[in-house]
Length: 210
Image (cartoon, rainbow, N blue to C red; front, top):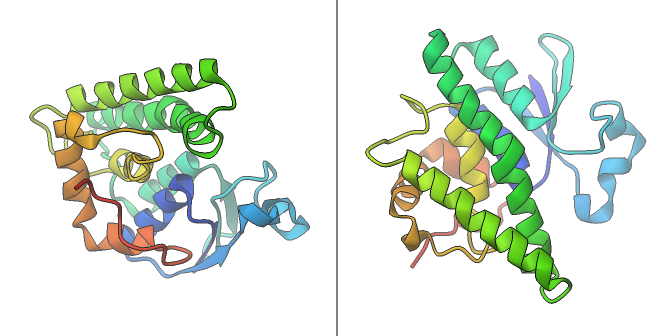
């Protein structure tokens, strides 16, 4: 059994989607970041960096934070969604690192300046709007003629999808990125993705462009 400490954010949804794809038994423990519950002493024993998601794998006794590390751990432990072949694995890992190091952090800043605090800083809005468009372009060009970020469906796709699901917050029209839109729609039909998206609370259907 796995305890998943999470909230309804892109980083939290990465892991709940993966747990659903693996069909593993887990218990979702909500950590309401809007109420600063991530700073509580119980959660800090699992996630010293005050961030969700985090897991405790009671089968191995391991507690782990950082969504990318959790996904790699689960993929390696269960032998799915991360290729064993060196070249194929490297391709998946590069796109996972791209999401962790660029797509997620930059889009998180877009959330702050373009969605929650519009008008606070025009230079910041311009900077993160431009970088958001650039990163969506990177993703769109990579997906030309491809179904997945790697050769097959992998943790890289699971990690990136929940961030694209916030495209409205990024002021991004997905129809301007047709390959991303095709990929996004494909993932959105997966039952495990649909279930994982609603963890820890049902927030309504996955946003889809009109």
